Length: 394
Image 1 (cartoon, rainbow, N blue to C red):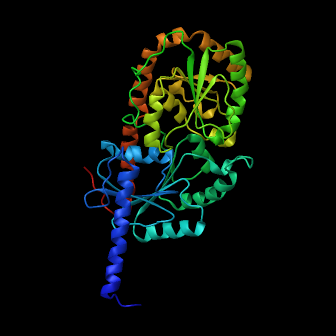
Image 2 (cartoon, rainbow, N blue to C red):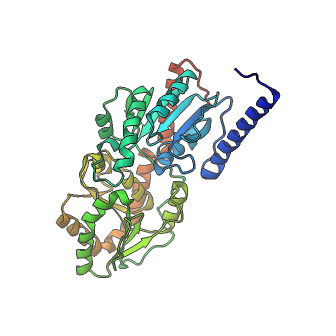
Image 3 (cartoon, one colour):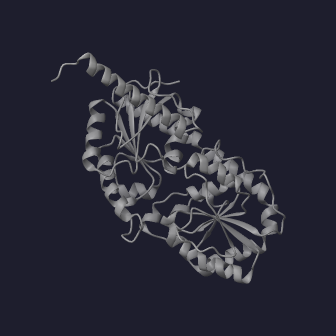
């Protein structure tokens, strides 16, 4: 073993300083909506492992960053790393692996081994059933390999957090529990009183949000909207966000492009595009879609829009019964409901203030990131205590 010369010591200290500076930059540049300290004494120190530390996914914000930033979570020190810069600080208490962090089994195994050697708790968080993707799915090739690696890490983890009961059944892991998706209401502007209110008989404003992974869902709905336009031209508009590549715009369609795909920038921008009367979420019934959560319903409620969704497992949440309209996977059923909403838009807008307040109350009382913060902190405290390391509290 080479002796630790003054030069080698200086190089090691320089590497550590650069790494510390890089981690600090991520906390400030990538997470401006949140305030996180680095690893230190008197706090629960978390190493968050992502696919890309420079571009956290919306799932990362919703399921981890938002709850961890809330006062109910308590004092936390955060390092955000990825497979290109995989590093665990000597103060780290917990390592949380987000769903697509690894696609190489060797790297994943070495990471878990190192976390174990350091006495860290290992948690895996996921909100998609990538192992059930159909081979025709546009992301099949890149996601199926990651799914296999993720399963291995899940089996070795101290605990696994999944977003739905269907995911819990799919994985069948004894160390897994459901942690439902919630919203950071500090990021979503209250929708009780929109900045602008349309005239009662103005065209119905509907919102559709979906990435290219939802091409099939949109393909089911598009002919319905064409028929609706043919019978009621000019009576509605659909604002399309994040839609399929090569989409051909139609007279009833208004395509808008977000200035940023980063969740903490996207949400305020989306709120400014409103107000919306209705939020559309068609979802074909498939094993992959069946494991999805009801997050679209929450998004639309936060925007003050009435969710109109497919009658499939993710949206059959009993507590949402009074807030959403569920539609069978039948074009005629979709057409009939949308015709009613377009024709009855004066009443829909008259009731909107009451409905928005009820939706906001539901989110605050039942689906708020503050509630998730309390749950996650209690679980991490218990897991750290089981490993024999006291967990700092405030």
